[in-house]
Image (cartoon, rainbow, N blue to C red; front, side):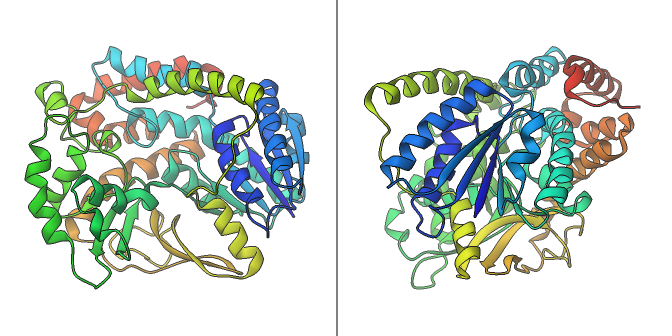
Length: 439
């Protein structure tokens, strides 16, 4: 069996996913093909993973492929392809995504999923995914593409609508959702045996039901405890807690993410909201800088002291592969097309996040029915942007980029139409060769 990892220079993530496979008897004897365009980062990953492979008993084989000219060889004969690329990296593209909008008074926190930052990230990534899909169609047409890259709904939606490649989008916000919520509210005693139903879109999937092991609804107690949580000055999850108060349900992804998916919290006319909700503006650039520095230290320590023992992580990838290979069964929260109206009050071309049963036949999405109308409405404000961004990437029409930005809840609530267009033009120019030509 062959497992190809695209963007293997993302060493920490490659270590988790490939390390998980090495912990799994059904997968550990695979060929692990590592691909990246950065030879130095790829070598760092190879060094770490080779040490892990030997520590785990020496099963399997690691192969490395550097550069676009070797991409097809990396993919040839793959059974599974894990995608973890970042087109344009932190420098220059993430910096551009934050600094150009800032000149227009538009502030962001993460900028990788929605907003003008999410739009630009999708536009520079989709052309690369098209190249991947073209190669896969030729050399591994039956492989399953496991996409971990943001903006999740835009990229996964593109792959599923415009390529023949079997694709599922994976995000770990579903796994940690209820554990974080119950822990922050002092309800740890309800964690064991809990039952949950989560559906919506990536990063804004709704915790529709949460019950304890006896089947008792936990939402009444959760709602009762929120005012005390909101009164804590240093609490960092206030946006999501207030979602429960105003819309009735909790969302999967963090408050710093959700602060920029709507028109409510980051507002230049109301600067006091930033402090009130502890919203960390420019959070993602800070994380990037810290991760880059942190990895240098960690890599040096590992070279000196050896690789730490790896235990299987919460990531879905290895469990999906294992389940398909062994014809077992496993449930995930997966990002798939809303074909057949899995969520009945969202459009079919939307990419939705719903429970999926994994078995020997692959990924089998489950029908959820209708979301509460207010939840579907909030999702639609994001889906509008996602669909228009995909349209822009496919048609290469600049007008669709303008429209996506105008309809983005945060951007449209802060800037007028002419300013939005000027900002988009500046972003396109700043991206240079990282974007194709738009007309």
